[in-house]
Image 1 (cartoon, one colour):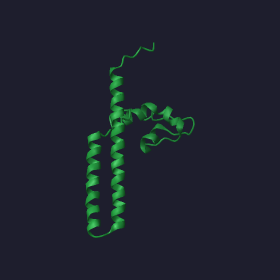
Image 2 (cartoon, rainbow, N blue to C red):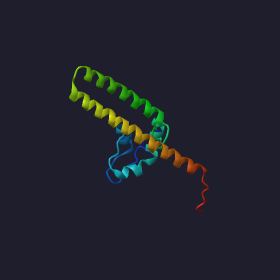
Image 3 (spheres, rainbow, N blue to C red):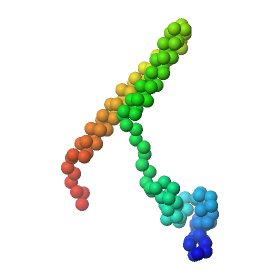
Length: 131
């Protein structure tokens, strides 16, 4: 099968980008190319990523807590060391960082709890069919 037979001569009427050039570069020439080469682009994305739709990775509250705990432990060790070495200004800065992590942890878990509550309400609520 030649390039013209498999659609490689397909061309964007707006910028002149050809399918062959798109395949070589992986880049579109203009916004219209997204429409013109949609099928080819979707096949490429599907082949590379396995899906056409982006699914954002979510981090569990437990993972967040572990990460924050680790960061706080490191800061607490630095804080103790600064106190032992009588570096008061450094100790104050570190103490402030620890307080910020405490606030982040407190707010993240509030938000996570609210999200779980909303998901639970959505799962078990009866919805009317809009049709």
